[in-house]
Length: 238
Length: 238
Image 1 (cartoon, each protein chain N blue to C red):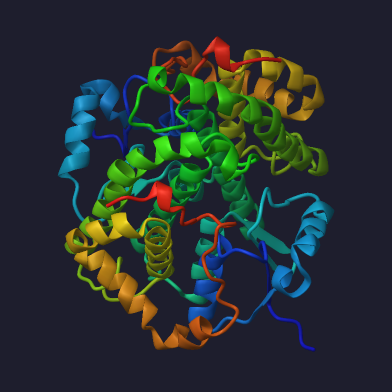
Image 2: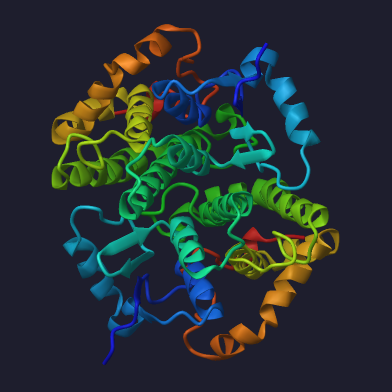
């Protein structure tokens, strides 16, 4: 078997941060092996522990020959540069990366709502704190992030974040909005009419012919309550 | 007055994320204006609100002519590329950025310890939750981050994170360790002997001749309890 150019390593059971990488790879038809989905998350842990030198701190990481690139936004920047997933002028490249980093901040926030005390405790051990954390996240943070992306889209030449050309940040925004809508369906239903451009972008990515086969395959992992975006009805409200 | 090449915008009262940018600029003698320190944080808020198009989500941001670069790690990557603050081979550039992104994750964790429920509430309104969050942060997260950087240093050619050549990530690690030692002095005193390379790097940056004038000046803002790293004795323990 010819070896694929990229090995992606990420937890096998959740979409999480790995999904942002998969979407970029799949939409551009870049061959990759999803190693922990082939061999299990134990294999991921063994691979992590075996790495020395310029090693990852945490999954996801992408291995390309001797190069091991970690941190979700850093991987997307790398793939964007190498495969032309983003307009190549300096302003566009750096702004796309800034947008992705902002989405990663939103992602962290969505995680911390159900794990406000610690990622090393179960949700069940921090439910009271999570309920308290959810209200300001729903009412202050989600609108602040959506207002930001809506403003960028409104000021741009459209229909994508950087204008006429789709880039990896658009795929990431799709995944972020999908995740928030999974975790907070009532709140996102309230916010959708105020953010028409953002939700239209989400719908446009959903309908991309380049992603149709992927979305229909079992390579696409459904959101679930072991992941970053979790639907706990007690944390949602309109 | 000739205009400086860069305008840095960040809250005037705290070191926070802005300090990571200042250290890179100061160590390389790159001229900049620290706009909110000249004109106040109200001026920062007005500037933020006036920006359209490819705008920042939050401070810090760096303005260079028509280019506005936001997200701390993204700004450091930009400065590193433009001013040779990092070895220029692809592996080194991308690994330095990965390291900085990991430091930013540690920084977020240090913030969330004193604001586990919400950044929009006062510490006094979430003290019980903060006390609960502090224990796993001190005992799981801080060692995990320090072990990681110590391992990178131990495997490298030393004495810096990328080997013989100092880069912007070393300055960032200095600031992270200083901040953690300010916030959690007892815990960091316990962890120091187990992480000699990391603490030696901190000491080496502290003693850099290039930074001596800066450290002695009022441009260097002391850690304080409005910032990201806060010393609340009730959250610290050995």
